[in-house]
Image (tube, rainbow, N blue to C red; front, top):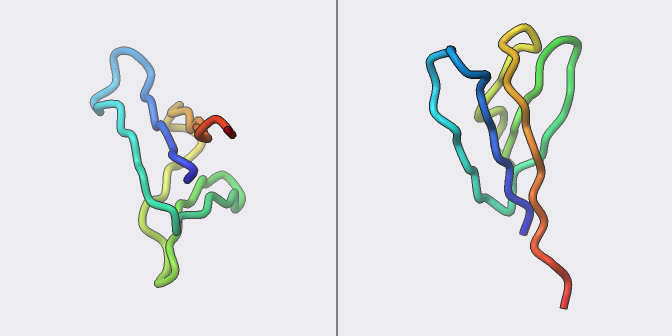
Length: 61
């Protein structure tokens, strides 16, 4: 199950967030990173916010 770790630059308001949902997909549309599930968008981050999104996959056995 993929997980997404969202981190914000130091000095900006915002906690690091770990999102664990097997139905989420990450797409880039213009200057926006958008996490969506089967119903629609759940979270959108603008590029100028400086946040990073890292996909974390579980190791294969």
